[in-house]
Length: 157
Image (cartoon, rainbow, N blue to C red; front, side):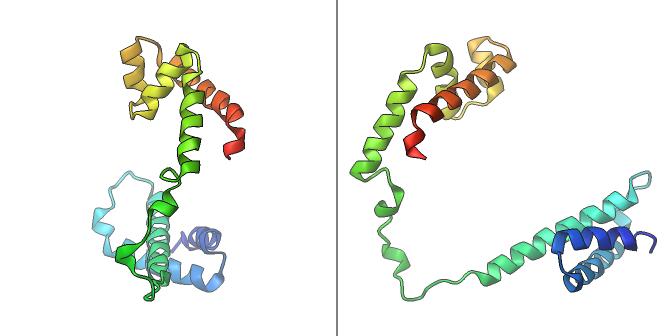
């Protein structure tokens, strides 16, 4: 009961509506009471309750989004022409990819190699191990490669 003012402030911050905030407080209180056996002593009780509130708000938000999703029954969902949407299958999209690849290939090797490895899915630490360089060096080289490419490819934004 002593947390109600804190809970109301947090609920108002999340919902920006007094009625929704009161509903969120009630849901949170019920969940906290239902799950009081999961509370561990020596843990911040206020933080535990506010975490329950945040998760409840997020779950309710996703639930509302799912119920508001409308599917147009007039569209044939099985025969959509997705190639028009992708961009890379069109001549303009293929040209754009060639320009992007060309810009990447024009980078000096210090930037191009870590950036290419990053694009293929390697993590920063894996690239650092593979190239035998410090992690910070890899991060900065990938950052500078991005900045260089952004300036060279500013027309693609």
